[in-house]
Length: 601
Image (cartoon, rainbow, N blue to C red; front, side, top):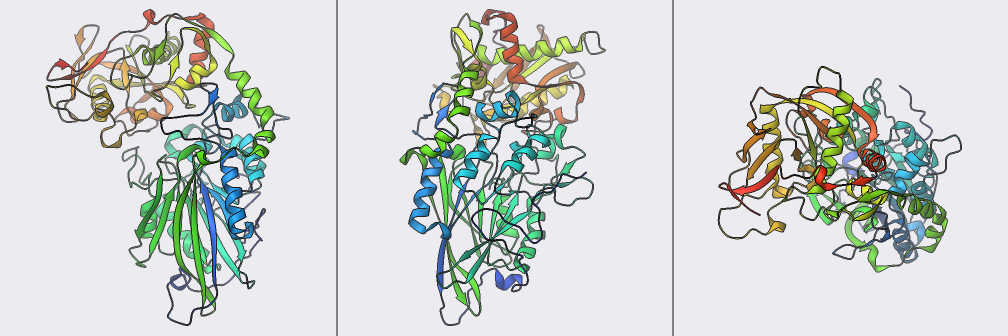
């Protein structure tokens, strides 16, 4: 399948701040990687590569869910308007010609601003607007951005339209055509910086994205795109970049550093492979890391072949931080060699928003604020997610109830109509709240920030138990007796909240005094123990159904129904139809934490 490669590979044509390079010749890869020579010291030159990642549709320092300026416990700020101010400061300090600006992906999904221009007033419409993220990043002057997995959430046409709007290339060396296996996006860009003496320093940026896209967005990419592993593709492309004259090789990788995967063994490739790339592929100088939503100012990994250190950095998500790679090169024996790479991270909360960016997108921002403040109904009581990770709460019951109701309606009259429906829900945000009284779209956006869709899969009783046991690994093993601090009993081994599922429609206990894998007790439905051979229909989001989180059995389970509409919109539509949220209709305590049979809370 052809994807219209307007900005493509090979002899890279570059728009923006750099000058295009055909990239011919060059030293052998081992030499070009910057091994220090012993000759007389020559001209030295320093430049800075700035990096962001996981912007997730944040332009303004604004929280559309609360309809207020963004704030968190650490008083972080968010958004490209803040990043723009930091970038301008660095460019003034270093000189714009001595800087580059890149991103490591997940740009066009995450806020209601991003959703609005993908679905409400889509950029793909006949007279569709330019995506706000493209407008902001163009104005700031990005040089390149890697593709993130969330770039594919709205389908390939939206992504391609976004790509067309960008004045910089979207890079994805391991996003390939499913049939030809040729790159479907630009693999790399070659930029040229000039030293004070006029010598060109050729800086290559290789983009790598996440192989999990093949699972998480299967509906959009299956049969169209494939996503080989990062290590494999870096090993293919880095020598090419060196042979084409790259003096410095940077990688923008939408892949964490941990070496782990959230999808188990469903793919042969590692999800969080950035450190493995540094360790196994020689010729890389630095890696801008994304995807994990953690802040790593600087990590150094020694390459097992060359013995050289590769510097990795991941700035915090949503534009909260800006990474700076300070690179020093020296002219030795007729070529540039990398002398040092150092990292630092700037905090966006230390500066004001750039008014140039906020004014550029003021009208779009106001449209989205008006949209999220539309009243859709009323609630008879306040519901909050504050205790949802440790207690069966009405707010998660609400999600599960709406999902189960949608599945029952869809399966009415089918061969599966008689099976009991169970429904999973995760706490995506502990600050999510549905107020008593008027309910607005933004409350549903806070409760369900992801653009997941709904599916129905058939599980046996034994498989459901295994599913719940896997979910229960989320809790820290805690000995009986004494009080339990709710803030310290969750997220065992780094399992995030979104990878813990509470399941409604069955009753069960989770004994956190027992080891993971042996915690689920008193599993019953309708007051009767669940038999291993019993069958259930699981109402489940597409991320989980496609393998996200690595939950057992569900990805291989028979799919009996699926929807194209986001679960968030199912919630909005339900409230509009009913006019009122009454927790007494759906709230019940179906599960509880115990220690040796004694309730924890």
